[in-house]
Image 1 (cartoon, rainbow, N blue to C red):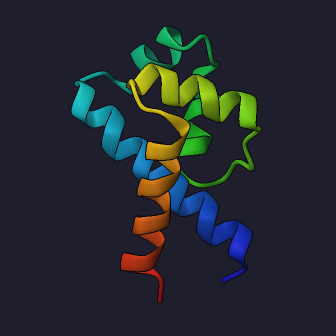
Image 2 (cartoon, rainbow, N blue to C red):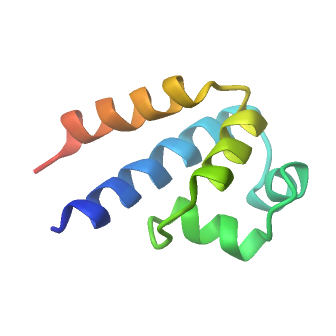
Image 3 (spheres, helix red, strand yellow):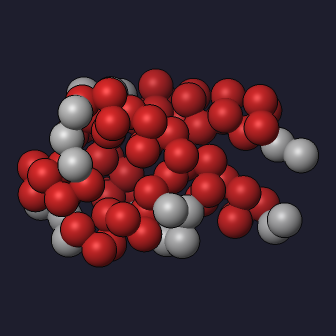
Amino acid sequence: MPIATTIQKAFGACVRHFRTDTGLSQEKFALKINMDRTYYASVESGRRNISIENIKKIADGLGLSLADLFSAVDNYEEEYHD
């Protein structure tokens, strides 16, 4: 699998994990961070090559620093990379 696809999927999986911990649906979380729900859903599913500005919106909405979010993605890739 190309690295871009792998990191997009890892990022989406981590974001989904943290969002579900908040108890918010995709729709409610997207509204909270002022992001289109369908765009946000494509991020969680790993189909979107997301900008750093939108990554920051998501991290802020989750109450995470960018460093913590990227660390989770990095750890996810190490754990689940084939």
